[in-house]
Length: 78
Image (tube, rainbow, N blue to C red):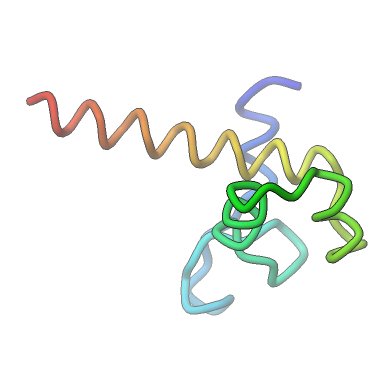
């Protein structure tokens, strides 16, 4: 799946979770998914905790984090 398609699964809406990034159609914060993976949970374990998520949602969260890391690195290099 192309990065653009993955990122389309992430929304930022001021009326949903205070404007923090969430998985489209849910109130699951991208940060929760990333934190769970950082703590060592597998994608399957995250999905067990949040059964309405898919593997593509997990990948979208990772892609979102990667884009932010690239932007921050770029800004720091200037």
